[in-house]
Length: 400
Image (cartoon, rainbow, N blue to C red; front, side, top):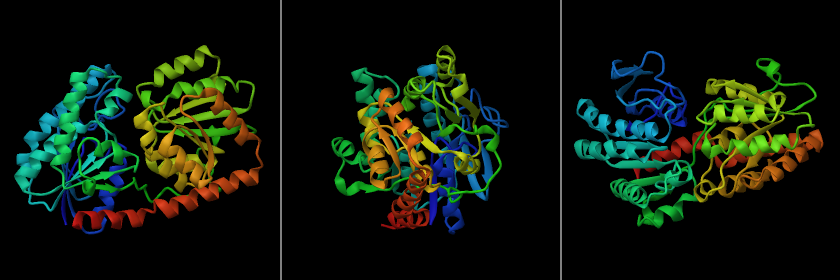
């Protein structure tokens, strides 16, 4: 099968789509990628990339066409908007350089939804159907994460989203919680297909690994938070919860970066919590299971918002796969999975008092019960999110 991936983000940026595409390539599919110059979570472009860098390269025998865009930097909402819209515009000019034909145009839609604009034009050029994989709901994401309340802007993006959905053969949703929202946008139910995020094959339980153990404090309850540190993650809730546990031996090891990091560090310093937090920066995904193996528990959090209650944070699958207890500060679908799996504790979103109580609860339970939570986590992953099954499922969706 000949597949054109349209995604604003791709390797070396660290997104789940990388492993999925590389796996499809290994299974014999012919893949071509239309993406942007890598800059996610950086103040500028990745080394070797920029406005004047080559707009074509081959990665693991996959032809990759890269469109120019304005890097995200740290310029707030305006710079982020320029980043989003510039990719959509410059990617249009790359389509004529791409060699078809294609059987499938596969859109990986995290934020922004504007990634679908070049995909619709590619559909007209290559006469191929679009399969639109929704990771974030739009325009709801603008309200929840971006703080946009202007009715004209929200209406404009709602119309744009509906136009892209209408031009798609199938709309893949990473959470069943998305279904009602998209149906209310006027999309027919027979277009929607539940397709959760698979996780990379290197996510599995590890034992006896010494690497990175120096970051974990003996006689402390060590909790790992991995991923983006942004507004959506409500990191302040975590800080406020740890402030209530200031006299307890608990430590948060943070793996990742994001726009809220400097604010978080300032808040931690002002509250005298430096000994309870360790920001280690970003690491390759393959190193995550090593860090997870040393942790007593893994932490996931989201803002209190309708849209975030509908989503399943992609890190949940990775956490489950590594067989560790999970501490969740969120509502809705993510909370449901943790409870259903019996693999940890759940606090409702943005409730720092309740979160601190749940952390204490895990700190005080018997080690054998913590171990059982980890076993439950892995068992649930194998039942609901098995990687090989999901790869075969995607192939069958494309063939339908």
